[in-house]
Image 1: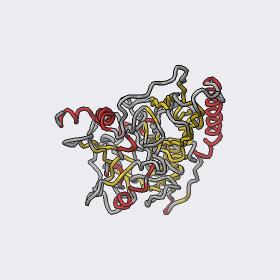
Image 2 (image 1 turned 30 degrees about the horizontal axis):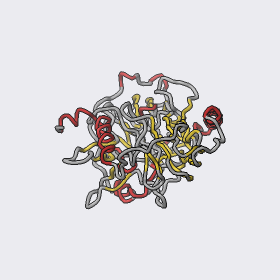
Image 3 (image 1 turned 90 degrees about the vertical axis):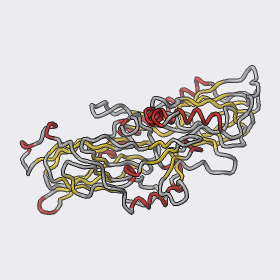
Image 4 (image 1 turned 135 degrees about the vertical axis):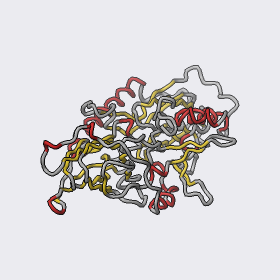
Amino acid sequence: MTHNVLHKMGAIGIVILILAMAIGIAPQQATAAPAQQAEATTWTVLTGAQAEVQQTEAGPAGAWQLLRFYPDNITINVGDTIVWKLNSAEPHTVTFAAPGEQPPSLTVPEGGDSQRILMNPLAVLPQGTDVYTGTVLTGSGQLGGGPGFPTEYRLTFTQAGTYDYNCIFHSTMTGNVVVQDAGSAYPKTQAQIDADAQAQIAADTQAAMQAEAQAQQVTNQPGSNGTTVYAANLGWGNGTLAYMRFSPQDLTIHVGDTVEWTAKDVEMPHTVTFTSGDAVPEFILTEPQQSGPPKLVINPQVAAPAGGDTYSGTGYFNSGLIWGTKVPIPGPRTYSLVFDTPGTYDYVCVIHDEIGMVGTITVLAGSDASQASTPSQLPVTGGPGTPPGPWWLLIVGAGVLVGGMLLVTMRRRTLGG
C-alpha cells in the first residue's frame, strides 16, 4: 500500500488497518477455539453510558459520560461467552491483564533520543484471541471513538476462576467476571442482569443531573484597571461521572478582560484550543512503517502550549494538555487568556470536540453591549502555533506514567484535515 493511499485513508482508516493486522500478529494466538458445551450461554455487558441534561445546538449528545461497565460484575460458567457492547460516544477498552501484571499503559515513549509519545499497541490494538484462559494479556483494543472502530467485543471463558478487567482509557472503570464450573446454577438470568444494569444507569444519570449545578458553578473576580477575570470550568468529573463541556459554554466579556479555564475533572485531560478559523489539528498522527502497523503519535502541536497569553483573534492559541486534578503528571491545571480585540471567537477541546466540547467567547468593545460583534466579523486568518517549548519535555518525561489516565478520541477527519 503506497503512502498516498495511506494518507487518503486518514486516521480512522489507518487504525482499521492496524486492527486487522493485529488480529494476525497477536501473541499466543490459538489455532482453534475449543468446542463449547451445548448449554453454553452468551451474556451481554454494556460498556459505558451517557446522559444528556438537554440537547443544544452546540453539539451532539453525550455531555455526561457515565464511566462504568453495566454490570461491573457478572457470574457465568465455563464455556460461556460475554459480549461487551459499547453504550456511549466515549471510547473504551475491555482489558484483562496478564496474571500478576499491571494493565498496559495507554502511552509509551518512542525510545532513543526521541521526545515523542506513542499510543501503546498493547492497549489500543486487540490482544490475545477470542478464548480466555486467564493466563495471558487479553483485550478488545479500542472500542468506539469513530465510525470504523468495533463497538462489540466477544470473549469465551474456558477456565474457572475470578478475573478482573478494566478500561485502559479510564483508570477507575473496572469490572469482574466470576467463572463457575460448567453446569453450575446461575445466580441471575440475563433479564435480571439487564434490569440491574438499567437501574445502575438510571442512578448514575440521576447523580449526573444532581451534579450539573456543581459542574457549571463558576466565580468571577475583579481584575486590574477595571477589568474582570472570568472563570470557566474545563470539564468536571469524579471518576464515574464526566461532564464533557466547557462551562459556561458561551461567554460574553469586554476588551481587556481575562478568561481562566480550570480543570475540574479528576482524570480526563482536555485542551482549550483557538484555531482562528483554521482546521482543528489531529490529536493522533499516523506514521506508516515499512513493516508492521503504523505508529500512532500524540500530536505535539496539541500536547504543548502555543500562542502566548493575549488573544487578538488570529493565530493558533492552545493550552496544551490540561490533566485531571488527581493525575500525577507535571503541568498546569489552569489556562488563561486576555482578549484585546472585539469579536466572536470559537474554541474547542481537541480531544473531545466531536462529542460537543466546544465554546464561544464574545468580546465587546468597552462596556457597551450594543457593540457586540457578529459572527461575520470573526477574524479567520492566522497560521500554525509556535513550536513546542520546554514544557513539552514534562509530558515526555511523564509518558510512562500516563497508564489509563489519557482519554483518546480518534478523529474522523483525514490527515491534515
